[in-house]
Image (tube, rainbow, N blue to C red):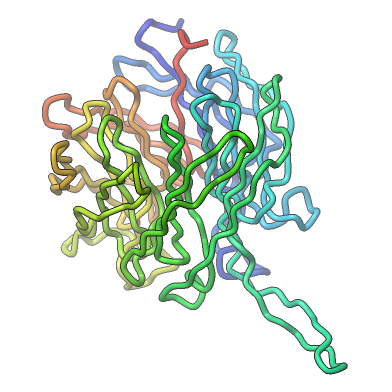
Length: 404
């Protein structure tokens, strides 16, 4: 029986991932489904109540404002075996009966679809296509000779219209990013790893391949992403995920390659980001499980989320640690409070805080589970509350029955 305090968590995850190899996967993923879990609002215990199979590598999720639909990015190079890159899927939610139903799917107009989000109206889906790390060749005729031209697959952010029935409609805009960085594989071309939008239609796109953060505005007549500015990050920093701090001019950005968490001030008149804080999430004394792709290199940063109180900030890295930070809401400055080791194998992935600020959920893709932590409302301290077994989970989003 569902209690008034209970809510739901929906999880997606990885299928096989080909990050640096074409023939053999770097990571063996088992996820072909969305998993809907009921969460006990008092204890944090999670129970899987439905799984919707047949969704290839649904690694990133977003819930519609009315919570009737959920959209996932299918993180693929070869969605449906057609050679067109990644995909996106629309799913209908029925929380009263704890069921999910596929509406439709679409090609994502780019490869390795790694992040999806919706505007405040739920009418437009913004999709970050990371782009593959492999070279492709095109051939030109130069002075009568066939000459190969070696290129990197382009990273892009696409905007899709949402149909009246909640399905994915037409592609209405496509923004191709540029830039390079420090690593010949990771940063040989632009790789947008996420895209977020606020209630004023400002859009932040961390470009991990180009060591930059793109600031855009979503216009609606016609629908178009206008680039306002490109903020250069530190060489080799690789900005990955971002978070708007509601009610403030501040934006948080988690870097991947150097593991630093940064805070920025967004000038909404000029569209320019100015950095305030840059702090390392790495614990040099912690002996965690090494991330296979990195060896002895600096741990990568992954995600950043915020408590509803607007003060507690949480991020995670590949050590694998969850870090708690304090945000000064007047200045935007960050302070590291503490680091928590997790029992997640070599890789955590997405993290989320529920709307009441009671629980933080961490997806543990390598150990095929999610961990629920209880949050102390006074200090922000984390205490393990429960675990649930899930197929190589990467993303989690919360749903609340009364919204529907």
